[in-house]
Image (tube, rainbow, N blue to C red; front, side):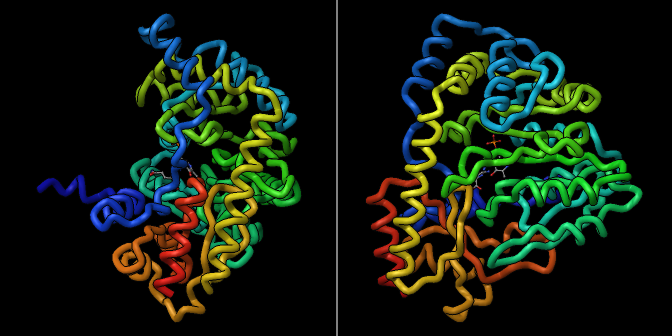
Length: 380
Ligand code: PMP
Ligand code: GLN
């Protein structure tokens, strides 16, 4: 028995995926698409693995990928970045989050976490020595409560972590929200860690606004992207970190000691992928949007109450009308009795939990979604 290991929780994604395997439930819990991702991007990785670089690539990432990242964000988000000084490649967004917290936080500092929060934030912040200050958002609209954020930013605050679009809520925050957030940060010493991994997964024609595109946030933001999300290939751990040079200096020091580099074949393929034409990205969005609509309609027909989802490939169901008060127990029953695995949204809270919402991943084949909806209808 080593008490150190008990300091870190087991992630809900691992717990629910294991339960899905054990029970044979359709796994709409952990978020991953059931297609393997674009073939041309995978072919580039294969080609690069055979003929390209095998040894350590440059610590900051391949120059080609850093340039492609700057060009991609200029094209899609109107952000102007110096690829040499403001872009770094990490082994997934997760490494970037860990690195940002390790680089910016000293024991006793405060980090503002906005709940619901992606499950890695709190354990990483705590292990970096931070004292968390929580802000709570809730259904049905998950409005960004900037007054609560302002109130949570004290003199010891070193970072505010924002996830936009917000997993698991499916909320997308726009320029006005970000400008208000900039106002809340003004005069503080806090950096905005802006987890934008879902930046390409927005629906209904809504464009993602990067925190870096808001002038008052430009020099105090660490923007984090993920090729795993951009190309629907979650196993590809390639993170894209963008920040002003004074922040990047600190972030790159942490990266040196976490992974130092990221597999070069994947970097070459991602550099290629980021240059794909607009239509590819828009089609991918439209295809996911259609799945969202299909699954939401099937859930409604089955007597469930799905909440709106403006971004991410997750759809939340309000299970309070079913008399549920414990979403974790409900999701366990759902896996065992209905044969569908979902994620209880309470897992994204540390305090004052929302306990009546279940999250379903809809990045699945239509037949899988239909089968899951059928099982849920029978259960209901
Ligand atoms: N942040 C959020 C909000 C996520 O949803 C995910 C992946 N599900 C990550 C970070 C991790 O991304 P990566 O796989 O690139 O580490
Ligand atoms: N990001 C994915 C989700 O929210 C899962 C990530 C993971 O398994 N760690 O479902």
